[in-house]
Length: 484
Image (tube, rainbow, N blue to C red):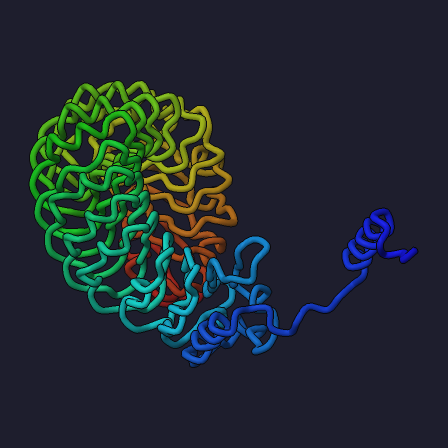
């Protein structure tokens, strides 16, 4: 009887061969990519003129491209799914790429994500080969050097869930077709040179939850948006007019509303007090006038509030904040009298800026429940008296302390400068004593117009940092007199 005619024998042989090929190491073929996809990636590499830190050094022809740096293939497949390359120029200045984005990437037919972060010197226009990729869903081209206009037919990329062009040099207007990208959840165009007005049909982007257009030249009024939006960041543009009533539809979900550094005007609408999910509200550097709505008492979950540099007037409402992290009410027409108690009670506050807020109090009466985490304190231009030593010396992480144009009186030599301390402005007070050697570690210093005396330690500050004192001498002021 032929052994291989036996069903048992055939089954046994099949099991043996399966185990053999499973457990026995075997060498994969040298090129595991599709030839077209390898050519597409190598075409990208050939368009890179400079790669000083070797980001693409293992992109070697004939090797497994799924193991190349930044290349991600589909699970259990050799088809390229994503390209993710990131530089770290702050930590390693050499980790950048110089060159262009080669259109040969259009050969990656299953590519669903293109991520090029912080490569700095990647130049050229918007990569139009993206229109040839039927599965593209995520495009992040952040902090490079791309320029030109965003294509008018950008709306044809209908599968996009996220589009980020942050930190490039794109110009021109925002194409109206962008409102056809109805799957978009994120749109980030910060820090470019885009201009013109925003498309009126932004509310068609019903899945959009994050919109950031910060740092451009957009102007006009702001349109209506979908109620699903959680972050609306329009700071540092040229928008004008009031905050439209349509913004009230965002009340249930919006956590971040940042409109600072524009030309908005009128009163702050009362409906903002209904934004119970609001974490951050920035209306700074605009032309808002009138009073802050009493409804702000309802913003119990707000962590960051910046109303600085507007035309706002008293009374400021009583807030019921459980834990503010940063507060800036500077440079309005407030007469607060004292630092509010709800600021005292916050255990997590790290930034307090109340410059020119009409505060009249002894600084010793400011006794916050926690000072450990303070990074920034600005109390300039008030009528605050007393000794700031206890407050400043109780902070471990203080970076800057501004208290110019007050009535503070204490010995400067007793001030401690922590490792992170960088900026000190005590000008136009009644501070006395000598300038301590520890000031040389600061980045900015102004102790002018006080009652300081003695020789200034060796430093690199201008004379304006020390003028107007009783008897300071030494560089950058006049030399000290030699004892006779």
